[in-house]
Picture (cartoon, rainbow, N blue to C red):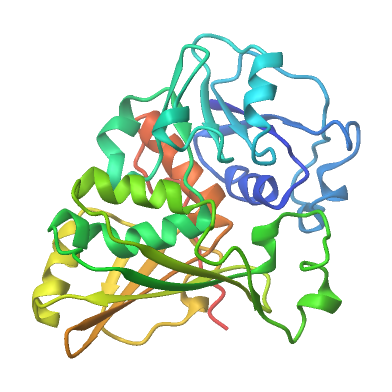
Length: 325
């Protein structure tokens, strides 16, 4: 069995990790670390776990676990790893943004691999340390990577993507509490979102000469979980040619489905799937990409990476049913 430790156990991402891992056939949850809830049942923070798992939060670390998931706020993983040491064999998967960019990937003798399986699967299988991608970054990269692979990105890409309130974390703020979010919508960090760095980095990994702009408008949606992203750019190839390139790129990727039909977000909520829909009008291609921000955009992708790191089928424990309606 793979002994797992979870750091920052009170947040939405940690809750999603626990829900999936407690039914994973190859995993034992060793500890869930939370200084604010130490000694209290997990169901204090994750109410749906009542009756499913008899386990308390702890403020004691087991430095000998096989894999450690870091679910800390962005920028806090570096300080945590400086203050706490783990066994030489412990694999670390960071769900924050501390190590995603190449310039930050080497830390304290640890080399973090960018954990987008559809891009870096071979490296992930050999890795000990993983930087899990951001949620917006996952949806947008999966929408664009086949174009980059075929060097078809020659113009600016216009991106509009809407995320659920869980993407902002569990601590309430002006734009996350119910009375503000309900029946409301807004954009934020227009053209300057923090995920643009990792998106551009991955595109340039496949198409080194791409230097046009990704014009990204992130939106706050009136729902709890999910990301609905639409992207368009100018491409001369026919729709059939573009679809064939997407299908070829993702032919061995179990969690990505390519279609030309209209899609909706509930097809992926509570799953590790990404569905990509393609259509064309004139020389403009429209790409729609949908994921669950907490699953494929965070915890599910982290578990997918763990499976690859331990030589398991990447779908193990991730056969999850969408909400559907």
